[in-house]
Length: 267
Image (tube, rainbow, N blue to C red):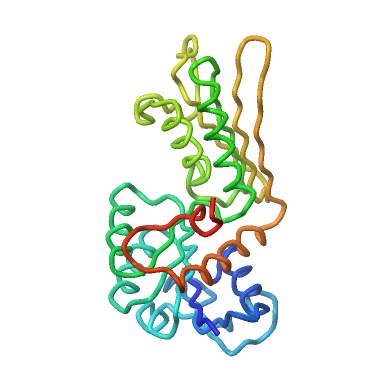
């Protein structure tokens, strides 16, 4: 039985990870972690996940929580993730990270931790989205510079970061396939008299509304035709199940490099 600590336990993803881990024959939730000011600290993790009492209280003591587990599944905040990955590395605990909004410097810290403990970082852990990553890479490489590329992502109105981690990854993939510098060609929203579109632009647009779980569309447009690749998540369970699959997979992997979900899925 693999012992799991869930960071961001009171969040939308954390609750589903707790619920699905509790049902999984290979996993056992031994710790639930959230921020000190979260009103769910001290409550039973199963109760807040809607599955009934499981005897694990949500705590804000990250050192104690990480000490109890074999693997940390982290869907929290960038600051908490960086703190947790350092502690996981110190204690030799594996880590699955789905937190988005990490800065470049924070990603470097995560990569450094991966040199001493098994660690996987992915902006989206669903099988469908990771297949989308592969398809977008192939299509962009095939079409080259003859098509305009626009990325549109939609999420619920409580999401704090924009663009989504998945949209940012899609933009990185397109830029890499087309040999462009995303820092130079990425356009994050448009307003006012912006002029004609630069053919090298990669547009990334964000929608925040209602309870949208997650939708991502990559458009390849040229005169006379348009190709659209779209993924729509109807439930967070697709992402949560991917995180559990990653947690089981990483227990057999060595430290030394930062893994991503395509490693887990063999893509």
